[in-house]
Length: 134
Length: 297
Image (cartoon, rainbow over all chains, first blue to last red):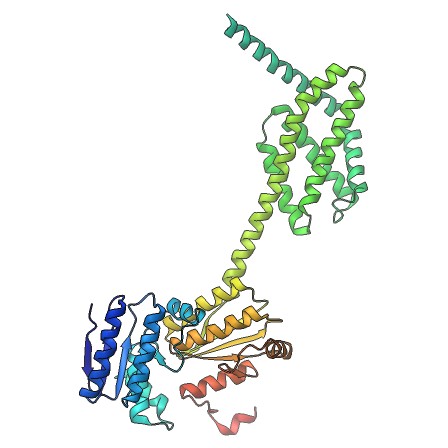
């Protein structure tokens, strides 16, 4: 099953809807990396809320995506990792280190806003808080 | 014909056992005082039930003895079972051990058997038959009491475990998006797992951004648990939350450094207050007194 990659302003949002095979993951990787360049996106959100398992290939692919996208000049954030998935990832030593993560889509958007628009400074938290309310 | 006679023999055999038991019960009733005293003496001698006083032992011995004779006579064990449970309820909190309970029941069995030997030593055949009737009933009684005790004990342990489980890991929200998780007492691997589960769930349901884990109340920590803690911190990060650990005691700090647990990823602050202040800063809060003039009071 292919993962839809949606454009939302400066960002790309890919929501994984069901467990993916290795081939689908590779398709997703190639698709995102290509679209980032084509649409001149500044950030990518990958939503994995629907996944209740993540194997090592999926984890590695997600990390690869994040690194490739950084090389293409954008930021990646992975959102919606389930608690059980998070803990088993850590326990099995799967390496998502260095990849930004956030609780859900909203948080992910706030994170990207801070990274890209804010560029640091003390407006960070206030920025994220007002984004929520809107 | 044969079937009928077999049945007759069967009935007469069970009648005989019933007769013997009746005789036995009469004997036990007759010598009640002496046998009870003998039993209580043996209990004290064997240093069982040391947490109980002399008179208390005798009172309990009397009650057990009467119930015992009752069970022998009626052949039903419900009353004895109920009594055993009641007794266990009373003595377990006082620290009576399983071996003591089994010990005293076996002593009673021994005391009674000896008295039977003494009484019937002249008639070996009758003694044999009496023992045939006595042994199974006595074994069953010993069994009932011991099992009753163990069951009661297990029930208490289960209840306590449940209570500890419920009490041990509160995840509390102190501000919007800020959780604290105070941990008190020793963390074993099972508790550590449960703690992680609750924390991660708590982060999700409260949409927490910062979590303060306070381990002031944790006396010691081994390598497994420390690693588990590191993993929990990492897992919380995957959910988008930052973890601040507070209240590491000097002993734990030393242990962790000696073991070589990688604490580089961990954000630690001296005490809970510092941790909450740090968390508030991270969330963009600034706490200021309402009125600077009254700050002295």
